[in-house]
Image (cartoon, rainbow, N blue to C red):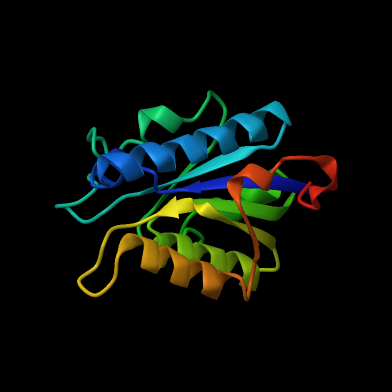
Length: 177
């Protein structure tokens, strides 16, 4: 069985809505994860949200995966319409073809699509590693982005292994591979 790095909804419009400092920090974390995954032969699967007519419209520049972490040729992209990336998509088939039993999850938005997909992956029996510094969201009316990410990390720790990006793929002894 295999490990797969699952990159959820890191699309231009969402990334561009982060403040510039957070955007740089977030994309640097993801680039490091992607570099280590690819160097070690870990498959990478992207998820891309197809939104309602007024958001993340298929085929637009805003809908595209951020060029800083763009898929390499042959890396699958699963398009979705719901928060849960498994719902009414071919994600389960893509993971089966890759013989995945372990998902390393990162992406946007922490409390929506990332959370829903991690929960569903665990429910389906996948071992899940949640990259604690590999997800991002926006400030809310009653909480900062950091507070939201911290809360999502606390919740995710109940169903997934929580790990900082620097430790993911760090060594054969990390227990992730």
